[in-house]
Image (cartoon, rainbow, N blue to C red; front, top):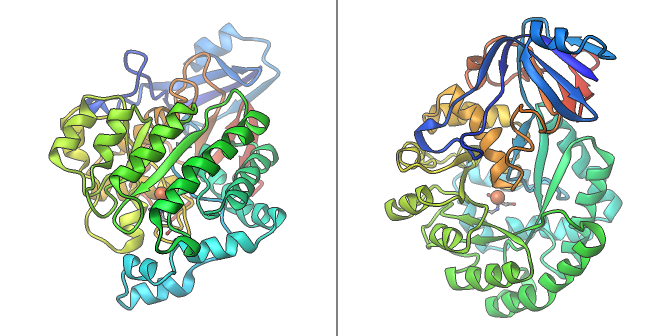
Length: 424
Ligand code: NIG
Ligand code: FE
């Protein structure tokens, strides 16, 4: 047994009625002062004050003194595209000079540029390029990370990316959650034939990925996502892909309202998707629908920031309508090469007007529901995974306030120390 005690603030990030923290109730940190956690066989066994825990478990093999610092659950990043090859620094230079993301995409750059590099990379190279990013995310506090495919755009390369995700999941102590995003963009060979590509996704890729799952990811959830956007996939095409995926047993996600409101959020709610993500241009009616549903509204604050845009998710309206709000990094080489949920929190406090407590809940207890791991990660309750971050600060209100520094001291995954500030 491992005990972590002397947490000046232990934020348990509790569930509400066995579910996420909905609407304006977001931001319940479940504070225990001078708190402690007992972890047995990788799972949380007990939680309470230091005195209670040390008295109840006198024979723990390992005892960590948190030194009066803040202790929280490991962070949960529910939306990333972290497995890719190459970079798009030259496109970023053009965007600084005024070119828009959509213009570059229409010229065959953007996602298609990363697709070319990702197709050309061997599996080993793809793993080697992605590994440091995932390590960096972990060192900044993430212990569960969703990872999308979507830079292959042909069956073989999409499967190669999924293979890379499984290999990285095995190589790293963090848990990765794979998502198939074959409908991320149109590859050049289908430039004038969107319907032909949708047919390929539906009739070839989805069945191939279903077979892949049976061998490589059996009994674990696999998501299917679609980029529903002007210049990517229409509402009807998104529906066709997601309905087919649902019938094959996939859990669903959607990229909706990043730039234009096409109805993707209503579609996500209708199909019972785990989450609808981006949600910048979301309409009032769809915010209401989110509030009446269990579909998590996943905001990606680094993305508008990364694009230099001024519009962010309408978080206050979503909370007023009782929606379940989560935040992620969206780590990707185009809009937001961001490896830090701490930075996502910092942007969310300023531009989504979340309190520090709300921002923390949005990337712990609530983001777990966006990947169907609610109650298992992102919260410190008996039975949940022993995923814990000890911070260098002693007040949760430092998170989202300070930025540009990594405030993590120690990362613990399933009861094992996997990173500590002192050892680098
Ligand atoms: O979430 N919107 C689509 N996908 C990514 C961008 C991917 C890229 O530009 O490489 C996003 O912003
Ligand atoms: Fe994305």
